[in-house]
Image (cartoon, rainbow, N blue to C red; front, side, top):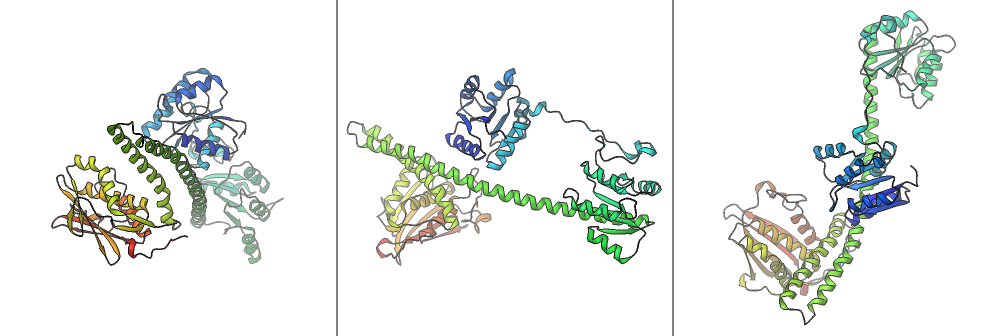
Length: 544
């Protein structure tokens, strides 16, 4: 690719624009311009030379599809390469993009290798897919040709290889006629009357599936032809069967040493010859399939490595680019809350903003922490966390949704109902505890029937703080054994199956335990979480 190519990257997400820019720069591209919607991109196109457009589909102001249609409506940009990116894979959407004049279509998520392949393709074939016509290649069958023309040449561009192709090499014309008549109904038979002619046919790039090669020929015998075939990387894998009247062990051994796969004695018995040809064609197909699978595995491994790098890049951008503005929101909220001139109503609104910002910040942090826990690389630094106030905070944040479902949240200290829970300090991580109990309480709320109550009872037993979350409604039988497994979910339209999985991971990381019991008789479910009691704990930092 020309490293001076100018790219226009169009996406409303700054993070995605940065990822695309970084990916193009990894490919050696130095000239990348960005736009955050189709309208901005069109303005840039009017004022600057652009060689390739890479555009997202869904954007405000002007979508990628609208940008594409605008580009194609202009004679100046009718052949401008446009690569459309989207997370949508519906067939009709792909068809819409093709009809609008897209050059290529790429589905998110992608990796650098896939992006480079698409970019190369749009540069080499910039015309819209809908305008690329595929050349019609007529099929010519053996019986449609005169008898004298049934031996076709491999260089014939009008022949479509619907049958396996055999190359027969023999200096005796009668032998060639016999073999063509014998094999022509089942295979496309190509012929060469000398070793030199056979090598020229192979050098033309038309590679047969199997070669039947006579040994005794003038000028260049079959052994020399086979030696040259096997010395060429492009033809080395073609099976060669020698046709010979020789039966000397030395000659047979020499043929196998040169790379032949079989010997057939002249005159060949038709059933035996056909059986051996078919056997070696099957072996060739099997070897080819193994080779393709090996290449596919190598490519998949490369894609996985690219995806890991891409994920790390996305997480790095998310962690860095999202944390700063979220931290700014929290800081501004704190400043506003300390302003004595602000009314209480406005302060209440600012508190909700602050809570939402903390919630988003927690999700950003946990996205990477969850992965590190699975990999065993998470660094755990415990401190004292008071579960009572933390649970109250979660309950307050859930108040609106609980009210909409007509569900109440009731606290108890050691079995005795309480307006507010006691402190119950544990050794843990506040963010992990918040996320764990937030997931568990939301799970209970979604499972509980309308008008019921969720009961949260806290206690201290054997140096552990126990938190029991009880709700009406039994866990579906199909997921009871896999309740804490990753992606385990049942009956939830938008369920991810990560809530209880992450809760267990967070509990174990904090040297705690979590268990579920359910009953069809009541029906009801109880989740029990145990965490080290702060006043009787010997929890240590765990570092990889």
